[in-house]
Image (cartoon, rainbow, N blue to C red):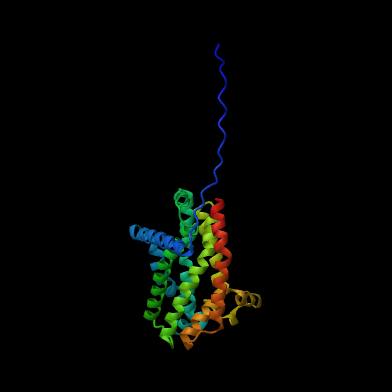
Length: 273
């Protein structure tokens, strides 16, 4: 008589998840590769650069025509005050696309493919920010050319160009804030609305378009605490004197603080999603 015995149940094997760790140099290389992917997106969809080309042309002409006579008596007298302020405002506005594009990648599933690859977790966001630097360079160059075309002649042209480079660097750092919004909010349209709300407050509650002496007392205190005001003042100082003042130092400190706070928050939020 044959006795049938049940086969022993297979023991479960617990495997630890594979964790890919990369060094800083490899993470930078991954970010550069994904930045190239962003540049190819601009090549295949050049309409994504329209706001970085059209707005820098329309903005200075519009603001100069509307506020020039009311604030400085003429548009020519208003240019030394307006061009540095419009330069900061328009380049900052171009950075909204970083958060919108990141949200679209998450919503469409592209970011899931990035996560499945053995790459640095910060590379997709850092690559998008590096690709966005091209937008900022285009916007800043266009504002500079339009300003000179309108008759703006800074005392130190080299200092003004250095101020434009400072604006591009500061905007790249501030883009981490909009990347965090893009990683947190579920819909691209909502991301754009929230980013524009932040930019409206930062841009108009500053000394970008009007002198602080013309503001109410409470608004003057807000402008004194606004990092955009320090950035605008730094560009004006570079254009007028050709030297880096305290405002430029505070702008750099504020930019580094934004990166230190929002870069880890963005990467952690993307991991949880």
